[in-house]
Length: 351
Length: 159
Image (cartoon, rainbow over all chains, first blue to last red):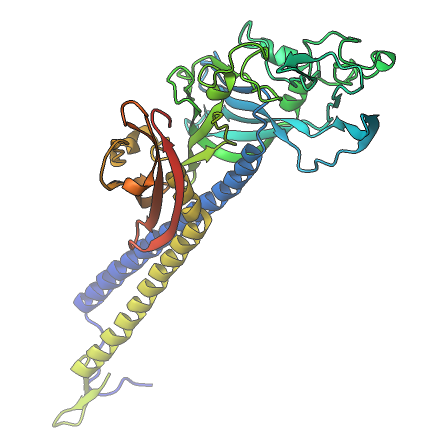
C-alpha cells in the first residue's frame, strides 16, 4: 500500500525533540513517582511508630498505675564494656518495681473471733515484680551499615510469692497511743544497697520479708509460728525473682534508640532526681533504689519516732516518671522521637 | 490531529490545533491535580490517624508535666517558663513547643480565688489550684488534633 500523497515521515529533528521530551517527561514522572512513594512510605512508617508508641504508652500506664508505693523502686543504668562496634553494646537502662496484680482475688484463710467480732487473715498474693528494660543493640554490619537502635523489654514475675499477715489474739505489736498495732509487714520495702547488683541477688531469695526471723513467735499464734511465720512462703529450689525477670524479658518495642528516663521524687529534690541516658560508651553505671513507704502509714521506723513527712521515705518516693526515646526506620532513614510522662500513684502528706 | 486541505487536495500533517493542545493540557492538569489531591489526602488521613494514636496521650503528658523529657536537639524548641505561685492577681502561664511530632500549646491559669493555703505568718501562698488546658496541633496543616483540660493542686517547692 502506497503512502498517501503529500504525507511525509518524521524528520530527524522532530524525532530527537520527541525523544528528548519523552525522556524528560518519563524522568519527571519517575522522580515524582519515587518521591511520592517515599513520602507515603514515610507517612506509613511514622503512623506505625505512633501506633506502636500508643500501645507502649498504655502498657506502661497500666503498670505504673498499679505501682505499690510500699515496695522498693529501682532505676538503674548499666554500661557495657564492649567496644567492638560490630557487636551490640547491650547497655541497659531499667526500672524495677512491684505492682498490684490485676486479679486481686484473695480468699478467706482464717477467721478469728475476738471481742465479739470476726477478723479475717488473708493470704496476700497480689504483688508482682515488674521490669522495663531498654538494651542498646546498635552495631555495625560487615558492609559498614549501622543497624541502629535497641529494644525495650518488659517482664513480670509469674510465680506469686505469698505471705501472711500476722493474726491472733496474743498480739504483742508496737504500742502507740495506748493501743497496739500489729500491721507491720514491709514486703520488699527495702533492698540491699551494698553494691550495684546486691539488690538483684537479694531478690533471688524470693522472700518478701528477708529481714524477718523465721519462726518468730513475737507476733503470731505460737502454735502456728513455724508454719505461718513472717517469711514468705517460698521454695528454695524455685527460680529467683530477679533471674526470672531477666529470663522473662520479652520485646515490647524495637528500633528504640537514644533512650532516656528521669525519675522525679515527691519532694522534687535534686538528690532524689535520677536521669539515665543510654548510648554506646556514654551510659553511666548508676543505681538508685527508692525505699517503699511503711504499709501501716507511719513515717518513721518506729511509731515512737517523729512522724515527719518531709524526711520520710514517703516524700522521696517517685512521683513522676519521664521517658524519651527515638524510633528509627532504618530502611527509610527516618526517625521520630517521643516523650511521655507518667504521674505515679500519689502520696499526700498528712494534713 | 487534523489534515488541512491544500489547493492540490493533498492531505498535509500540520500539527495540533490550539483546541487539541488545550484539551490535552486540561486532561493532564486534571490528572495531576487528582494525583496531588490523592497524595495530600493520604497524608492528611495519615496525620489524622497519627493524631488519633498519640495526640491525646501527648496532651495528657504535657498537662501532667510542663517540662517533659525531650531529646537534646528539641529542648530549645520548648519554651518552659515558670511563674510566681505568690502572685496576687490572675496568672496565665503559656508554654509552647514541639513534642512527639506535634506543636503543643499548654496554658495554665490560676486566680486569686484559687488560693488554697497561705503561710499563717508571712502570707506567702503555699498551695493553689490551677487549671491546665492543652491543645495539640499537627505540624502538617496546623489542624487541632486533641484538646485536654484538667485541674490540679500546685504546692510551693514541689514539682
